[in-house]
Image 1 (cartoon, rainbow, N blue to C red):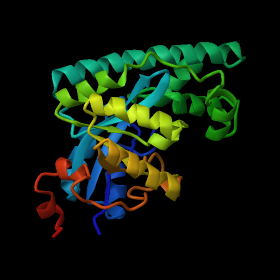
Image 2: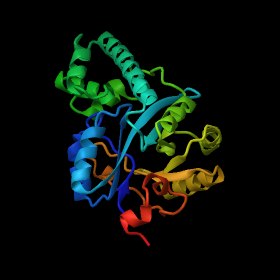
Image 3: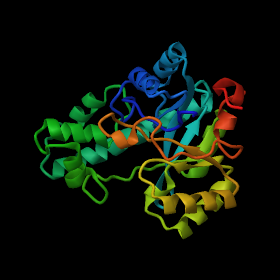
Image 4: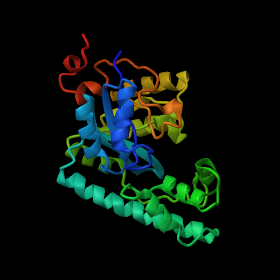
Amino acid sequence: MLLYDLHMHSNASDGVLAPGALVDLCVDKGIQIMALTDHDTLGGIAEASRIAADRGVHFIPGAEFTCLWRRQVLHILGLNLDEQDPDLQAYMLELVAVRDKRAEKIAERLIKKGISADILDQARTIAGDASICRPHFAKALIQGGYVASAKAAFDVYLGQGKVGDVKAEWPDPEHVINIIHHAGGYAVLAHPTKYNMTFTRLRLLFGELQGWQCDAVEVSYPGMNPDQARELLKVVKQYELLVSAGSDFHSPEFGWTAPGRFPVIDVDDRHLLNKLVVNFNVEVGLS
């Protein structure tokens, strides 16, 4: 059976493992094709690509881009990106500024709630070279003794509707898709049923994504129920979009999102893998 994963994170963003360690874990799990898709950064690509080549894993460089559609935050995966594309490089610098501005607002709000004035410095130290995001603030809150766990940090301070839930000025999906395409990549809507939208609203989104020439939709990932999966496949087919799948891996702590762990879907001519991997059948030994 073909083992692959087109949606995973390292500590270049909010994952736990270093990019090379993630590749090693994929090898241990028998993954033959893997993509690294950190949030709004390409910081882990060079290391992961090098280790994957050494370990005989087919590596796909990618990122998970945050965008805003009708006041709804969405995530668009860019897969098979050319890191050297000048427009992509310029865009990544813009995203650093967006995340930094958001981090400053999160810190301001937390300080008003009685959190230490150096919370931003602590979060930045934890993030290091990674793209700063809320999990880094969660770790800072734990270190400061304000909460006992990351879950508590999100439940009290950082989760949806909480004081640290700051909406950044993210770009619209059409712009993100254009950037991905310009860099030679494929654009994929990530985990559509996780946005708490009705299928009526999802159809509206899919129609616009089709108009913007989005390539695919993730239709298999942890946490889906069979009814959602069937309905999602039906709608994706209606809009003539390709399909993709991934675990959205962040940490070995969460076994239900281990690399390669998502509901099995057919790898047929509607699967994005056939565009991502040249001579696909030959490389993975399929008939």
